[in-house]
Every structure is written in C-alpha cells, then in structure tokens.
Image 1 (spheres, rainbow, N blue to C red):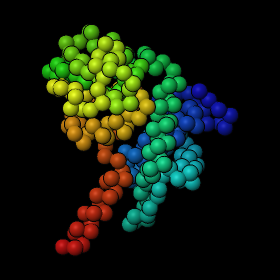
Image 2 (image 1 turned 90 degrees about the horizontal axis):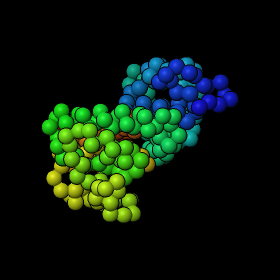
Image 3 (image 1 turned 180 degrees about the vertical axis):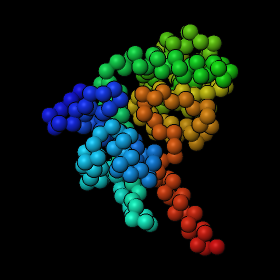
Length: 232
C-alpha cells in the first residue's frame, strides 16, 4: 500500500499507509495512556515529526483525549469515537491485508499448538468468518476438538460444520476460547474477558487485540482510587 503524502516506508513491520499509521497510534494509546510521542515514534517506526502530526490529527478528530499530569507530562486516552475508529480500521486492515490467509494459517496453527501443549482439548471459537474457517481447517492437525462458535450476529445454526450459538453458556464445556472475530475483535475480547480468565482467551496477533485493560478504564480506576484515598 502507499500514498502520495511521502509517508510510505518499506521495511517489514513498518506502517506504509495513513490508515495503518493511524491504527498503530490508536493501538499504542489504547495499551498505554502514558506513552510519549518519542516512544510512539519508535514503536511505529516513523519519524517523530510525523508521529506528532498524526497525534494532533487524532486529537482534532476527537479520537484521542489528552490531559496534563504532574511533572509537565501528558496522558492520552481513546475516546468512544476513538474506539469505534480503531475497530473500523482494524476490520479494514484485515480485509485488505496482503497475505491474510498465509498469516491466518500460521497464526491459527500457533494458537491450536498452544492449546494442545496446555492440555486444552475442548476449544471454542468467537466469530464466524474467514478466520474461523481457516481455524477449523487447521484444527484437523492437532489433538483438539472445536466445540462450537460464539457469534451473536451470525444468521444461521452452523458454520464450517460447527454449531453457532449466541450465548457463552450455550457452548457447553470448553477449556479455552480463540478469538476469530474480524469485525470487532477488541470488543469481543473485552466482553469475554469479563467472564473468562484472559489466560484461557487466545488472540491471533493479526487481530491487533490489546490484552491490557483499556487506558480509559485504568484512568477511571486511578481517579476512583485517589478519591477513596482522599476521603480516608
């Protein structure tokens, strides 16, 4: 991918489009509200000036909120609009990503190998789509049983030969869940993490899911903690 703004870069792992840089920045802020422009620049593999420009753009669009903390430092938080944009860009990235099926096959195998090594024989999937289908194909090579798929939006009872259910309790017994949702993977992970130990929730890297608690939630918890300390 590329554009005409001079932002295109070629090294592997370095973002090469406006959308990918924006997504990388939103992911970085989501995972760490205390991130600095310099560390974000290093993480994304782009120039500091370009990082500053994209950060200002995200703030202007209402995707990122900035607040000053002691010692003249700043904290950054994703707004609800920012979370929505992050989800949209993630879905766009996945649908257009070069070599998606090669990456998916490799990462699905890694997830299933992790389950087998941990002794998790009964595995559920979350999201009925292309990634889920790749997972079902890869599962034949591992000593695991896919027990079903959790997908509230899916219109049908089965997908790739597996039952599709709308509620977690309808899956029956399972040892772990692998996220395969391509449309809103972060939201699916966050919802399941409330009911399942994150240690038993597996997330393929291509979904770009942050396994950390969102920075907005951490910020709210910090504020509540400070209020409780002040009251005492």
